[in-house]
Length: 379
Image (cartoon, rainbow, N blue to C red):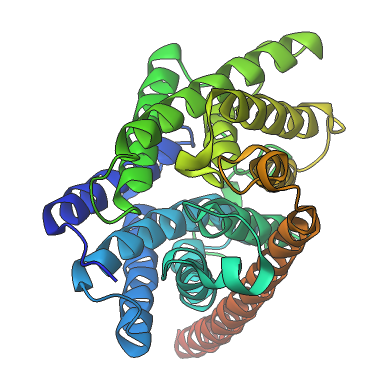
């Protein structure tokens, strides 16, 4: 195994973190406590990735694991902020509870999935399942989307924590929890730019060294995100929702998810097919859902579908080994199996994280209740 380029890994690790602020830009104003909690959860996930890499000795160069850890941190930060609404605005500890939940999920799910997809060449997913995932989109998109989907099924404020003194007048969770007010064009453009920067950095960095494929990776990352945005806008126009919540930024994420599995193996035809079909399918799921449907749940499902479709198209049109070139059809089934397996593993890890956070919340609530009773008795 060739050692990675240390400069490339450091630069890519720094740039891939831009994916987190790109998503946070679209959310409601995030308070300092929530940002601190999200960063703490991200650091926990990153630490677990580094520890797993050291234990399994997946790479000869430790700096290669740094990029994976940065990606895990960015994804876990996003999951923390988005899932915080599941605890309800009346729960005063929702920031640390969301951090516990997401941190445990990141440690249990992200590290193993990254190790299985980009830890070795060929990866475990390629060897065991004969599935295509050139840039680890199963870890960056399928896993967090599955976690958010499961968490969106849990009723908000299902944990019993005594409300704080100012929580009586706090706004209650609504069907729009987890998604922002319609962002301005400037915020949307900035978020899309940050996503494109993070996508290009990740796709190039995950190759570990600059090679002949680097140019195509950069082009595919940018073109996939652009086609994802255009697909979102077109489908939104067709279904009559020209300015849905989240704007075209979710389309950019769908485009990245759709082309990531193929990476540098997608020629222009395969790139366009994966980005347009995958992003359009994901957009249709998001926009055609009933008006009252949970926005986090439908966005998560759209991302999973875009990732699966992009992977299927990669197994058909990838240069050299796709169905069109080799005639092998087994990869079509195993690609779906890989998505399902990762989704189930991530969902289980999310439930474990939520149960742990809920138990901690109940303990804190009980302690606060006893303290309040003692204080009332003394007065």
